[in-house]
Amino acid sequence: MYLRFNCTSTTPRRTDPMPSTSSWHFWNAVDGIRYRAPFFSALSFSTSARCMKELSIAEQSGQTFPAILSSEEVVSRLQARVDKQPFRAMYSSVLNGIITDVAFMLIPMDDHMVHRGHGVFDTAIIAQGCLYELDAHLDRLLRSASMAKITSPFSRKELREILVRTVAVSKNRNGFLRYWLSAGPGGFALSSRECPIASFYAIVQDANQNSRKSVKVITSSIPMKPPLFATMKNVNYLPNALSIMEAEEQGAFAGIWVDEGGFVAEGPNMNVAFVNSAGELIMPAFDKILSGCTARRVLALAEECLSDLKPAISNLKAVIVRPILAAEAKNASEMMMIGSSLPIVPVVQWDDQIIGNGEPGSVTLALKTLLEEEMLSDSCPYREPIPYDFYA
Ligand SMILES: Cc1ncc(COP(=O)(O)O)c(C=O)c1O
Image 1 (cartoon, rainbow, N blue to C red):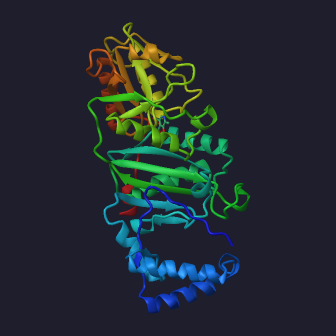
Image 2 (spheres, rainbow, N blue to C red; image 1 turned 90 degrees about the vertical axis):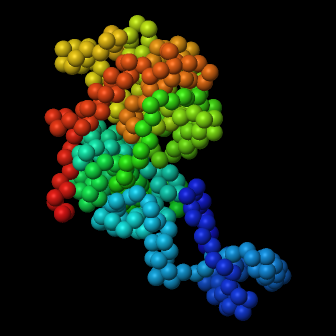
């Protein structure tokens, strides 16, 4: 028998009062039977006696221990845990259905994504009742899954249908659709051979009001992920989490990764781009970083502004994807971060260096307006209307 334990930053530390001494003897006896061998039988009598003495001291000091819960208690505790979480609907292939009670929006402990990080994910924004760029995000999810040796349990068409229907059930009109493909539940082995079927989960989250006029960034001291893991959107985001926490500790919005050659990479959840004094929009190539769906859209929109397809943006003269040294980037006239959730944030300071004149740049603001208009435009081909009436 193995005892496994995981601790996440969101694990509730819910404990129960130690039972009274008399009931504790019963509780201990129950445990003795349940965990007889080899975990507990390995304890010598003197060790047990010492444990009991320590528990008794702990009881007197007010320390608490977990109770053994009935199914009803589990349900009521799950429901008590979650009253204000902004999640409207969740799809789970494990349950083969859509859940609207947030208390049950859970995934199995033995899912390979939970204990080995063997999963990939993506997020699409819901803007005024439409999913924006769903296909680009779905393509990236499937690319990531293939790199992670995860075989989707559904065809692309089926995945898409599940996602659209989950949003319809949620009734959410402005928020985020987050989804994961995992190697699936089945065991705790390192290899996913014990997990017969991959799992698919999706959750709809309300929008949070986090738009920013302009931000400061720092150079991240957290090591960058190697290209294989940076180009695949897998759930191993510990470097990304540590990078943004490092930035927050220093009063900054995000950390920017710079590679060993001094070239700019990306932020922890957004791409970066610059405009130099010659009016060139420069974006680092995507070969060692995540290929951002929004960044690619910004490149396409900027190109259209240079042709006759869209009105020109004054000060925008060229669009270039190339490696850019941090030293050159810090001297740019404009800097922006780009990602589906915000979607463009002007950067006015990087470490001690003020970018341009310290104000959001004009090209940055023009591209932000263009992108936001596209996300809300009925004629935009990248918007998927949600059939809310289907579940009315
Ligand atoms: C590491 C990283 N870079 C860039 C991005 C921006 O990608 P997108 O525009 O597709 O949201 C994200 C967000 O998914 C990310 O996690």
